Image (cartoon, rainbow, N blue to C red):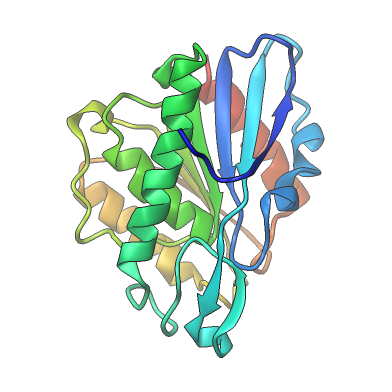
Length: 218
């Protein structure tokens, strides 16, 4: 199985849970690497963090500049993206989940985290995976495939948490509110919390990420 290049960080030598964490547009897997120690997870949690690098591609709204991206963005808004590229990225993330299962991690102990574009991929990938997962954490993200996604029954009651900045100029808060609305329409009961921040991550949010991971991963 050929996988995208990725960073792996293990808190213990024998991991019992895996977190697949996707970066945003123009970044790479190193973007969230410094945050992992800041989570201060207890020693009792043997977690393997996997931070894939997105492939590079031209981005239409950025004048065709080539950069790491999970999918092309054609213009600003919730739906103006290259859906085929998002679905291709979803398939790549499914490969990472499959590989973790092959390595002995129960699917119920595999959790997806994604920032911005990465969160959009995580929502599609997590809802459509054919084995039950631990949950999805979306950070400053949106849900471009909300009206087309067909969730797999295995993840019909998947725990989902959305964190977003009220001062986000790139993905305004109404996009996060729509994500919550769409998820509820699909039958989910997502958690939602905002922070007075732009399109970024703040100290309070990092603490909340840690708390949610500890509650969600058994």
